[in-house]
Image (tube, rainbow, N blue to C red; front, side, top):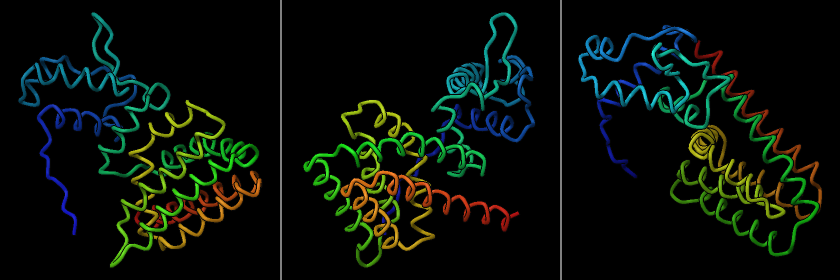
Amino acid sequence: MKFETIVAPTITELFENQIQKAILSGQLAIGEKLPTEQELANNMNVSKSIVHIGIKNLERQGFVRIVPRHGIYVANYPEEGNIDTLMALLKVNDGTLDQNNITSLLTARQGVEGIQIKLMAENHTDEEIAELRRLLDNIKAAAFREPRPDPDEVAEELFKFHRYITRSNNNTVTPMIFNAFHDVIVVYWAQWVRKVSPEVLFQTEEIMADYIEQGKGDAASDLLYQTMTKYLGEEADSHIMNR
């Protein structure tokens, strides 16, 4: 069994988490003005320096706006947020996103990767296919690991396989975009591995590699879409059952 290092959150992180949860729950509404840093420090029994650093971090994460000489306001994070906002959303909710955010994330991934799959199918080299097969072998090794597969390992190998696809045609930007979603995507792939047989996931990726090698870009892109749609369907059912 693999044990993970236990790391206690700092006071600043605890402060940020409390404000984030208040915003995400609607206790603090978008556009609402927060108390001053001194008032927050007094109410939460922490130093003003902790509050100041935490507010700066929350601003960077897209949760608040600091208006000079006016105060601190809850930002419109769904419209004005960034990748730091997404990462914070994942952490503050203990590794889960709500159904709307999951759908939005996977839709964005389809937009990034779907086009690159078609381009790779149309213009791949023998060397690229060989590398794709090597990455596929890594997925297979992780999926069939004895005595049992590690979902996190399988998820990481899946990520590397799909990230390589985004590099097709020497595109240097899409892999960086894909990397930005790494932590979120890997968490949900690991969840998917726990729900579905890792062997089935490997077989799906094997079919996708075959489609790409055969020049069937539309079929490969459709397979990606179908896989994500199936995941979203099961996640939606799970959310309904857990209400």
